[in-house]
Structures are given as structure tokens and as C-alpha cells.
Length: 77
Ligand SMILES: [Zn+2]
Image (cartoon, rainbow, N blue to C red):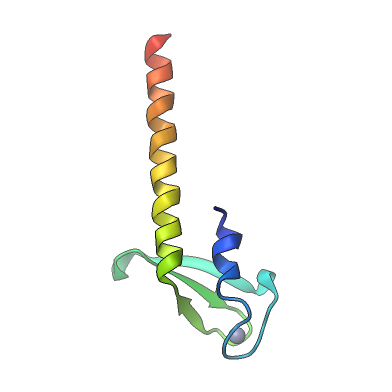
């Protein structure tokens, strides 16, 4: 899953109706327990999504698995 697919969950903006994906930004507040938010740049409203967090965890897991299999490959050489 790509970041844009996560952002699409928040479109259109509930406050101003902005539906331009280029006007949304994705960011993670690490000090709030790594909760994922997107921010609408038209009205500066921020949205949180539980499914966005699940998607993020899935991406993390995939990255770790890729890194592990890469290490295994380099060990066999
Ligand atoms: Zn907005």
C-alpha cells in the first residue's frame, strides 16, 4: 500500500471539502505513539485513521521482511 492510498481515505476533507490529493500531507507524530495523521492544507485540519495505522504497520512489516531476506542472500554469497 502506498502513502497516497492511505491519504485517499481522508478525501474529501470533512471541513472544507478539499478533494485535491496534492493538498494533503501525511505525517506521523512520534511523540503521540507514532499515530498517523494526514493534514489538509486548505483548512489545516488534521485527521487520524485507525486503518491508516494498520496500513503503516503492514508497510513496516514488509520492509523488515525484505531487509531480512536481503541479509540472508548476502550470507549465502
Ligand atoms: Zn480542509
